[in-house]
Image 1 (spheres, rainbow, N blue to C red):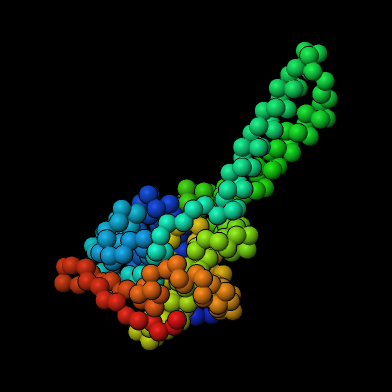
Image 2 (image 1 turned 30 degrees about the horizontal axis):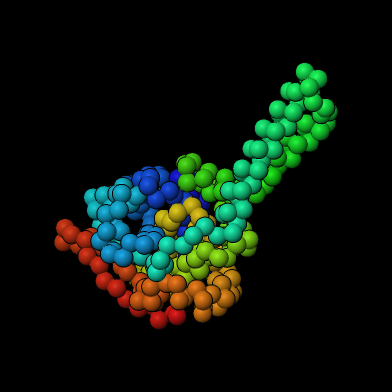
Length: 273
């Protein structure tokens, strides 16, 4: 999985873009570099027990590295679980249809062109190229956010801001029917307005925070950088969206730390919602 380094006026961030079934093994979480972080925020998704989150396979490397080499680093969970699973939103369904249409269009044009070469059908080279590139263009354009998400989750190393921005456009601008957008905004508010001030008081400086979320959550960056953006998203979803989330988790911030040779956690209320 790739990662991106960025900053707000209040903190420095290293965000990893992951697949949930893959172990997070980026070098920013290696034993030599993890000590540069003041805290790590993990996505919990539908996992409700904090102890199950820290021992989830995706975070096994991070758990082991902190336990062995940097036990003072706290882990935070700010995510909010949806009450139920959701069906694919309209854009996801449209993208799926576009892939089918694109394959059929390209295949049909290839067959017709082959028949034309044998003088069985009548199709010009220009028409063949138009159909082929049109089909390819449809598939590529509509599915670019999905391709970008896959790239972020499967490649390693630092990336610039273009691909995360494309992913963000898909979830934050094109289709807001999924709760990814709202969870991004809630997480960003909890980090910037609760965790960051807490760490600043403890360290006396601008904190450095690692974020490990699925690649679809590239929009967290924009919500961290722009308070107005996260406030507008939360306000927009405040009635309908909040009803789809587990109420007890909306204000909850879980802090975990490896103390006395075991993981311990506490749950605080951030009081921001």
